[in-house]
Length: 359
Image (tube, helix red, strand yellow):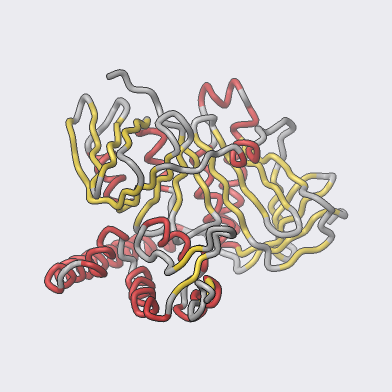
């Protein structure tokens, strides 16, 4: 009898429970929703019908913005523990919604009311969000003075997507956007380097538009909305081969899922001025600094215990750029780049370099 008899492929199960296949893979990595069977030869995941209720509950909790650490309590804890976690989350959600509404109203009050080549259409707000995510990884100060191209964002366009890439050599941020339409796209990718200040300014303009056309040709790059045009001044130079970095990443040995806002708050509020060490073991993440002692957070940790250190000035912006209530750290070793990602946005990847700390 076939081991997959009565089971559903990941695509079929995703449609059945209303989750994306990428989210199901993420929940498998986290141990929240492992498949019923994994084909050893192909790696394909298969799910059983009796997993549907759990998957739907996961989806509903995630739609409510619940971190995975709390989601696990609702899924596997006692009824009393689940009720307490849900009540606390509802309280936090009300406070967050009120703060977001106030901030949005302040922003609204402050707002002021080609040649042959590549042209793609993007969502204005989506483009602005992508710029916001990658811009913190752009080099500044001495790093930019030494390598001027690192003060730019690489804008890369091909038939399938638009990619924004930034790096300061200590972190790498890549955001992919799916065009709504494209015209005259050249075979293979084309790319330009745009100063981050110019791109941020253009993104602020695009944010108010439903869609915006990105044009790249021999004369440069620009954003267009009908007759309104914002030129993107380009910079000559060579950008690092970021694809080689991504392709050379080893398979992670450790995965740590933790509440993103809580991790960011602990690091920022503690005022860490030197490296902060993260020690992941069992279901806890401990943060240690010579100046601020030790703090702990609930976490979902897979793989053997690991101790790794970061410069807070590098890690905190990577957390700020993320999307969703929790963050996943994929660690291959304490000396290799760490992938920072979430289930809520598979199109955004951040790499952060750890630092060495003397014992």
